[in-house]
Image (cartoon, rainbow, N blue to C red; front, side, top):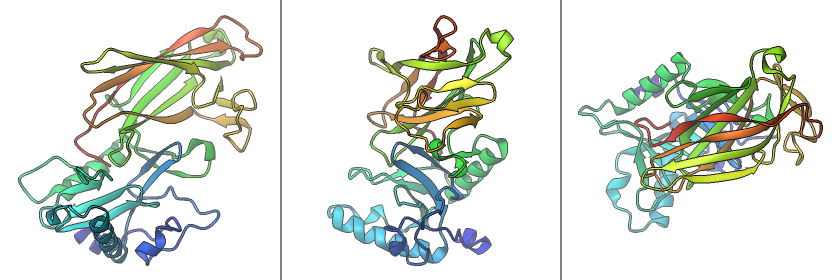
Length: 326
């Protein structure tokens, strides 16, 4: 409760279907952004997360709503599961819900799984300082640059800028440069989603065109290798990435009909910075998996290549359940 004495949450709009449950926060209107939650977020396909620090009155209301909803949907749920639990944070669309145990201070995330409704979000400790340790670790990651400000939904940039929960530092972030193409990759564990993990892959040109031997290059295909402990490697090949074929140039990438044949981006032209996309992967929370591989590029473009195709390495990154969940 002390955190609400310091500041009474965020007065941010919520999804129109969620706002009535909270009663004290307004619904999102046309033009409103959902990406300003204090506890960060991410997106993959239609799964959008941005965790708002709720005002105390809103937290009380949504806690009561969730308790009633779960009792109705999971009638055999033990009463101790939600005993002393209070919602303190929630995604703008209620797709992710953060609980604190008011008795022992532990932090939990609502999983939407009947067998384990809540998942511990902080390492167990002897004291009642779970929320403090959870918050301090989050603040440390912000201060160190482990989390950064980015566009939570890249195709809507410059809208939807907020705290991205994709790691920006090793060992969770991997970085590799091949033939002047830099690739950065990382993943987030999603206890609230059946896929388990969302991953982000970002790419850009580095060096000069004289050093690389080409002015621009275009992604043609991907070649993933998924190595799960105790299983044979799984290999996946396909054209482009999520229907896109980015054309990398110095300082950014080109959005046009060739790079975006399905019109995922509303605005065409040059986009500054990394090309970045997000997808999801996983079958269960017990997976211990490495994800990596390569991508094939051509100098120039697919329609007008200026040289031979080459492969760019994607350094493997790990899919695992971390000690702290955000």
